Image (cartoon, rainbow, N blue to C red):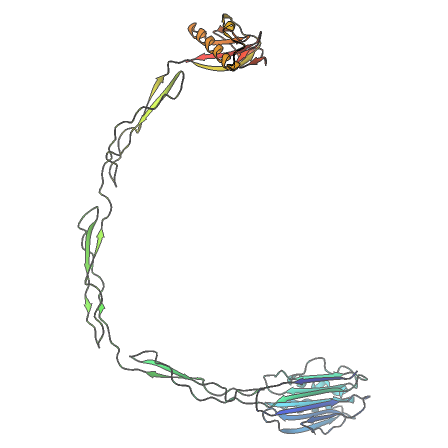
Length: 427
């Protein structure tokens, strides 16, 4: 298979270029090996190693050497020595063919110094074409092509621009002075653009920036205040007094401005409130009794705001609240529950007071039955009472719910027949 590597660099420059064509034929490839530069064959081709050297700055031809490998086992050493002697801004064109692969190993480090990379001619009677550079900073156009035996010749077609060294532009105008007096500095600049360095060309020598001193006359000095003096004692110990402090002005020079501001400063001091001891207000009204039946408590309060305590004043002495007991004069009645037995005697029956056919809800009539029965129990100073069969009222001094049989046959707070809804009476 025949491979041709084409690399063309296009630049917006007036520099001339080098048209390079290297053809390295293998042992079994038709045609010859040659190194063309701008249409001229610059090689003195023999079998083995062929080298052409060009000046990278001008493109001029510097020389050509061939190291014939026919019967010369030292050809690789000779190639190495020759390549190591090429330094600086030089382009090196190499074509190795036929038996040259046998004697290439001593020259491999020298080829790599010029930019070649591994692998290099790893098979016998192969072909190798190479464009390298002897300078330290390697350009992008370094190229190598190689083929094994029977794979066809190795060819490189390359157009290279000639190296252009940079030249300085004219100096620009000086910048504005950094100060208007008491010397400042100013700068001017130039650029390495006439022309710019290209194709491995050298950068412009010297500095791109220049500096000089400017405006050396004295600057106006404005007046300068001294430090503030100490504050005078405060005119009050509390509730906002005043104090002041002075300062002096060092006079201006060279047309400077006088000190701005005042020679005396005043501020408020000791803004804290003066201490006031707290005093109690009158007692408020008693609250309602804490319960609606039996004995409870009621309370009243007063505030420490006559006057209110201020700053470090003493707080009010004594209690903020007052409590006393209260008696509602009403007995409390608690529901205990529905039971099948109640150890007592009948206190009375109110069944005849029930109107079974009036629109008044039955539950309201049962509430009246319970209220009547509680009145009888309270009159007899009994602690427990029960309502059975909707209107029969029973009373007792003792009742233990744990020892009684519970029942579920109760409605509206009263028991059905032989069932007792029990209540507890207490203060």
